[in-house]
Length: 239
Image (cartoon, rainbow, N blue to C red; front, top):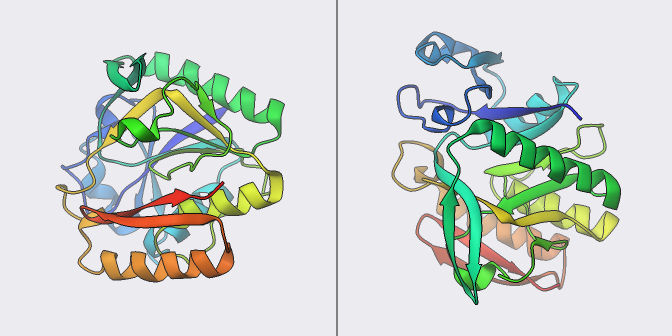
């Protein structure tokens, strides 16, 4: 099954890191910034300048692509396989894009088998969130930083959510289908706090508070708690 690795980016020419591993990934950038991003060898697709924010950007990518999509944030630090030992883990790093692509193909295949339209990877640096003896979570959050979508027009992001759009889509998908596919074997770690832009948006905390309030109203009983961690809020589901 064919899928594209899509890296949305804005205002970060010269700062992104995900291209270092994913040479075949497509960079989606505002049309006004295309020339700045030509320092990279990746294919570049221009997004109209009137498309604002990550949620609208993700939807534009979905609607203008006939393949399945794996969304990847532009600030990947490293990734690899989870090596489990009791409740602790370490990461065996993957430096070969081909290995990642083959693993993602398998995850998309699992989605088709279990009737899930979205998939995600283990991303959170907290042992207790890893469920270390389960290779998959079938009711876990799929974060937008490394999220796959079967792009058949069934699911788009809710554009009323400027942030936490990935949580909203996951919760909606769980309500509709009762399942997601979240790998606990494949890992990615991004840098969301130091790189210019993104999670360093000065208004992000207030946006996240508002988004969490909306999620609690829209999906009553499904959110156990939301904790402020660094530059954002992490949400624990009640499933």
